[in-house]
Image 1 (tube, rainbow, N blue to C red):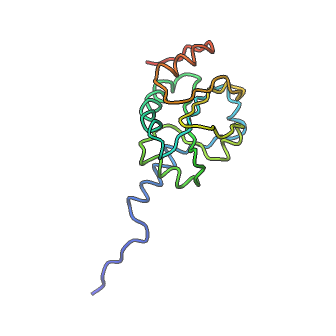
Image 2 (image 1 turned 90 degrees about the vertical axis):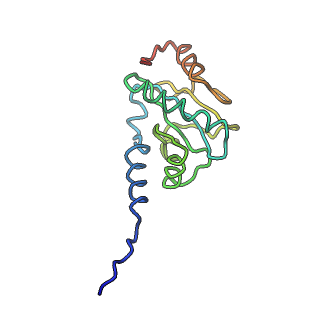
Image 3 (image 1 turned 90 degrees about the horizontal axis):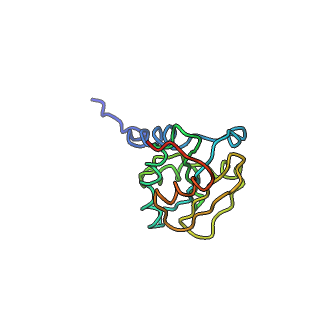
Amino acid sequence: MLKPRKPLVSLSLLVLIFVGMTTFWNPLTAAETNDGNWRIVNYWSEWCAPCRVEIPIFNELSVRLAKSNVMVVGVNFDEDPMELTLEIAGEMGIEFTVLSQEEVDLLALKLPDVLPTTYLLSPSNKVVAKLIGQQSEQDILDALTLQGLTPLTD
């Protein structure tokens, strides 16, 4: 009688990879970095406690701003390989787009000195605000308002 063989890759790993590829990793091309969108770029790390507190705020903002010209994206401060970054992002509950290091390079952003740090980038990718420390939703909306933006936040 034949014994069933164990699969080489677990179903849960396949699901994680699929979710990571479809939910978190929406690669930016050079053309998309000049797409007319403003960007809220949040640097996070798994060891950063205030970063973990901010994640639900950025998840909510990414949904509320989806129909505006403002995108929420995240960057793993630790510069781990993308596969590991997506795994960590999933474990941390990050639902907004996470950029690869190559995508960060296209935006010409430098690693911040402290965490959490959030940048507001204009459509031409100019840093117009650097928010250091844990931010509230209102802090982010205020930074957008200072730039003359009135994002739809329904």
